[in-house]
Image 1 (cartoon, one colour):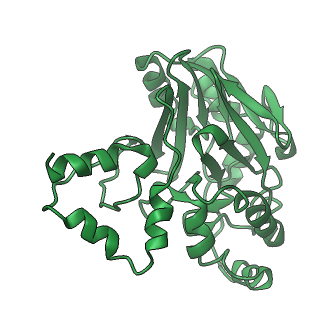
Image 2 (image 1 turned 30 degrees about the vertical axis):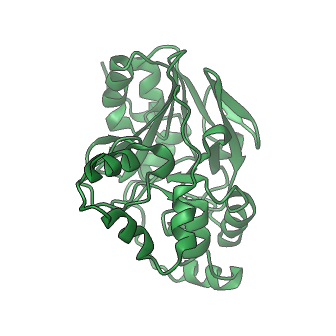
Length: 303
């Protein structure tokens, strides 16, 4: 077998996706189980693995739960708000859910769902967003039968409101809602335990976290949510945030516990860091929050 074939398999395997961090061009959508392929000289894969000063980190990245053959995950991207939307589906029943859809991308998402032969059962939001308008209301029009979902604590309208540890099912799979407030009161992390993955919204970002200076934000609460809820998930769980501003696609519990520059600090230091970020006032907040209280229906395009 050629070295090229070996690397192709490594990169295409969901359980080993992060063994090689190859530069990727940003696309409007991407499949988590598919990415770039490159050819290496014989032995170079071994040298890359052993070049790490900490071999435990390599082991940490490789030992991920493999996706079941009937599980589908696609990561989609909105360039304006730097928002990740996630499409999950049961490939046998064709039932699907969307996490954190964006209003302007609702037609794209609906078209993709129809092309893949899926039926969108639920459109979930990790929280009431301030940087974009949710696409859930529009998707309910484009794909009749879609049920909008958000946390009860969010105060936003939806067809279904979730409490801590409640479950949403699609086909044979289920997403567990885990309350992780701090960025907002209503933040949730959605966990698919069978696949070893979690969708952290704005609570935990890749090497960062959501801001806490608006929308009932509280730094101590966020710190507690991350350390007592997200960081208590198994180390090999893959984490998918609602945003990334540097082109990163995913991380893991183990990585963030070791390398997150804010959340590896003690709580008092973290609170001080968050209090001194001096971030600008969110551009969309005055429009997005009122719209998102109405499930995104506030600004749905007229047919």
